[in-house]
Amino acid sequence: MATIVPFQGIRFNEQTEALNKLVTPPYDVIDVESQDAFYQSSPYNIIRLEYGKKYNNDSQSSNRYTRAAEFFGKWRKQDVLVKDEEPSLYLYQQEFEVNNEKRVRTGFVCGVKLEPYENGIVLPHEETMPKHKADRLELMRACKANFSPIFGLFTDRERLVDKLLLETAQGRQPDVEFTDGDKQVHRMWVISDPVIIAKIQESMGEHKVFIADGHHRYETALAYRDERRNSDANTTGIKPYDYVMMTLVNLYDPGLTILPTHRLVKQVDNTERFLSQLEGEFSVENIDLDQHYGSPEKIESLLKDRACLDESEGTKQRHVFVVYNGQHCLRLVTLKDDQKLQAMMPAGHSDAWHRLDVSVLQNLVLEKHLGIGREERASGEYLKYTRDGNEVFRDVDNGNFDLGIFMNPTLMEEVIQVASGGEKMPQKSTFFFPKLITGLVINEL
Image (cartoon, rainbow, N blue to C red):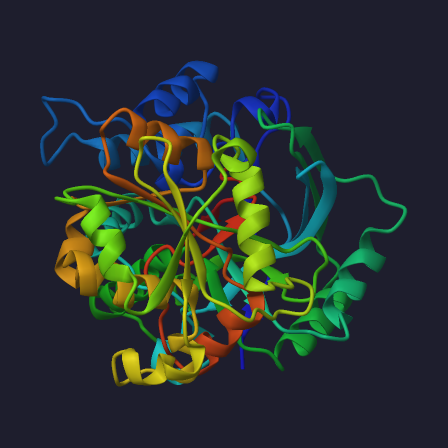
C-alpha cells in the first residue's frame, strides 16, 4: 500500500513577512486579476514561483519557468526560504465556514511514493486535460521542487492516524498560524519525532491514497521521475524525485467537505427545444421564481431535498438538476426511471460510475442532446465550470452563456467507489473545499 516519508521542508523565514502576504491558493484557480494582486502583496509572494507572469518578450532562455528558478535560488541564498534541519511531517489544519457552520479539516503533509495508477496504490478519480500537465512539467524541470501539495485521501475509519497526529500536537502551540484573505485560519505543526513518524508510516502502510485534487501535478510528477531516472547516471536507491509532496486527509475526517460544481453551456441554438427534448428521459418542471430565483442557496437546498441526498450517510435516491436559460426561467429536471439507467448509459463503466450525477449529465444531457462530447469538453469552448451560483445567473443573463445547470455535490462514498474500481470520473466532478494553500511547505527534488 502507500509509502510515505518525512522530508526536510523548505519554508518561509518567519522574519520575512506575514505569511498571509506570501501564500496563494493553487495555481489553477488563479486568474490574471488575482495573480496581479498576489504580485503586489509582497515581493516574496509564492506566486512568483508557482504561477509567474508571462511577458511578450519571453523566450526559451527567459520565461516564467526560468524566472521561477531564479527567484527560488535567490530567496534561498537570502534566507527568505529556509530548509528544516530534520526530516518532518507537517500536521495541517484549516478552519473555515460553510453555510455559517464552522468546520476544521485536519491532514498532514508528507512525501508519497510515486506509483503508476495501474498498481492500484495511488488512484485518480477524475479526467485531466493535457495542457495543464505540460505547464507543470516545465516548472518542475526548471525548479526541481514541489511548490504546492497534491490533495490526497485515505480511508481510516478508526482514525488511528488522526489520533497519532493530534496527540503529538496536543498542548503545543502551532509552528504556523495565520488567517488568509478569505477568513480561513491555517495552522501547522512540524512533527520531527522519529518514533511518531514511524508509527504514522506503519499505519499509512495499510491504506491506498485517492487523489482528491491535483491529478495534473501527480501525473506530471510521474513523468518528471521517469525523465530523471533516464538522465541520472546513478539510479540506485531511493531518490527525492521518487516521491511527491501531498497533503493527506482521512475520508472520515469530520471537516472533509465537497461542494457542487455547476455548469455553464454556450452555443445552444434553441433552449426551449432542448428542454423539450429532455422530456424523453427526464421530467421537466417549472420552479416558483419568487421562491427560488436569484438565490443559489435555495436552489442547492431544493436539489438536495428532491434527490433525497444525505451527505452524512453518502446516499441519494434521484438524479436531479436545475436548468436556467435566462428570462427568469428555472426548470427542475429529474431522471424519470433510475432502474433503466444502466441501459441508457455507455458500456464499459461500472454501476457506480453510471450513477454519478455528473455522468448522467454528461451522457444523457450534454452529449446526447447538445452534441458536447469528449472533444468539445476538452476544447473548453462550450463549457465553463463554476462553484459560484450567482455567476451562473450573471453569465446567462448577460448573454455569455445560453444555459446554466445547477448540480448536487458528488458524495464522498461515490468518489471512493469509482476510484477503487480504477475508473475516472468526468472532469470537474468534485470541488473539495477549501483548497489547500500554496507556500506553507516546499519539497525539494
